[in-house]
Length: 533
Image (spheres, rainbow, N blue to C red):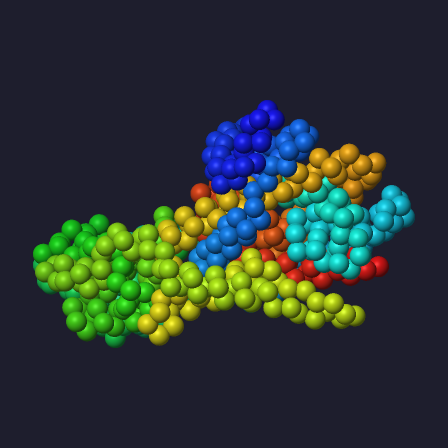
């Protein structure tokens, strides 16, 4: 094996892709329906690097490869979650404060147990804390404040492995209850409704009356009359037949408010009014809201958008929803005008894979710059957010804005998904070889078992505390909780595991992005204080 390891050491790029391919092959193997997914790349890399170190050969992928993968991953996750992140932020105050308190509790427990039970050096305790929460910037802070980075690194290496495994176990437990989630998006459906009311309510008045959002996509007056798209000021007459689009509960509310469900289908009559799925690939429309596009569609062609399909999810076309490149919108409009409307929106598959190099390059550049800014700490010293956190923040902002002037800042969902997976796999391969090389040395010492037990304690406090608090206090669904656990651990492998189990449900990425920046800052500060004690 020495010859093979020597060859691989000279070919780090080949090594990276072999670990990616081999790890993903292992990750697809399932035991009782559970597989590691992309997280298997990390564990395979750790095992191979530890084996090569035992053979006296340093097998490592250059740090720059891991950094590149991590920033691409962070930007894609942030850009994809930006549209919903800031809407959810107001509801995230409680979970974020709880997470910060748990970090403090874990650090205090580490200090007390490490000092008075295991008689460990403070640098070793601080390094163990950094490894148990799997955060390399926290390791740097612990090494700097303790003045003994070598000892801190030993603690980090031993505790790191369970830091990943323990949080994956917690994420798996959360996902076992995911079928009970109350925040699962309701499927969008449609129903034809016969109006029984005689008071001539307007469409807008009915919406205000029921207090929910639906789309009135078609209206026909009389059994053989023309079909048109009603405006909010349209008065509804007794006997009118309307098509309602929305989630099940909202549609039922409209039926109760207007009359009764009808078996007659307005969609079947496509002589004057028809519908078509159109891919938004024209850059001029990306970053605009559905309401803005509807104004133009109504003025030019008498058409409107009723649904938006993003990735594999159908969503009601709310006026405030921002349109992203590659969205497939269902447009209802005059039959003879749909071809013209398709041309106006683009309707090209290129929109699904456009990585938007301008936004990507500027986002990564400004994000890395933000992450490198030194922030002073009380009592002296300073810290920086790091490239990943800086890029994540910029990605969130760019995803939320959608466009700045003529520059589109939101990437297509499909492009973000591809980039996040590729970046994640490269990072896991590099991080695994780095940790694997250290683990062999760390376990050769006399205190490895103390470090391991202390690391298990720290990870368990975080995993157990977050699981219980988010479930019992904040009633968080298991799907979002699995992402939040990965974000609190600032550990992409946990996110990869959760994505693999849920088919990349958007709630996973939202939970991850919701707490990641605060988790990163808190860990660095706590590790710095702990190392200086």
